[in-house]
Length: 283
Image 1 (cartoon, helix red, strand yellow):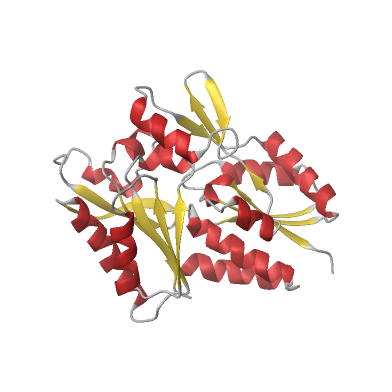
Image 2: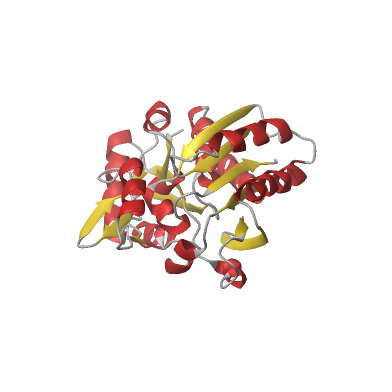
């Protein structure tokens, strides 16, 4: 059976070490700041990005790879891995045009067996699916079995997070059902979730640490006493509350593993500094 190669985009937030371990090629999204365009995680690293986000007065924008860039990417993957079978797991189509570009490329490359899978998620919500698919592909699973598992994971994936402000989501047009929180008092901290691939509101509380406690409490309600294998804690770096959040996760969710995942510049553009969240699946 021909090898299945799993690919993803830069917003999945997987470390260079993990990507190398599992042979996962990545296509970067773009960050445009001033007159300069950067490749997410390649020509603009997360540490520099979050420092600039605090220091600079101008605001970055993001964009997906073009269909042409996807064609070059898929062609390179096919040649490098000597395969025609590629499964791409990408950021939610509700948050980015990445899947659309990938599908346009797929249509123009009938010589390859390319499957574009919409994760309906972001960051490690997609990243956990990518890792499971890479494991299954390495073990020789069929494409049909692999895609069925991905659909199961997508249905059971949970992403809950707190932000200091909705300003960044509002500016980037990714606010979804959380728009009803706009215009509220500045000291209110929104608690958000991904639902069907969109950012939706859960509730708002008055204190920062209370918002983090509520994120974990809501997550614990989804776990319902069944500890998840992995909980990924999403953060934007330099956050003094990361340890606090980790303790809450370990005490209330009791996962087998906790990972800390620094949000890439593209995702950070939309959530802003200070965002903290949890990702896990219950299937």
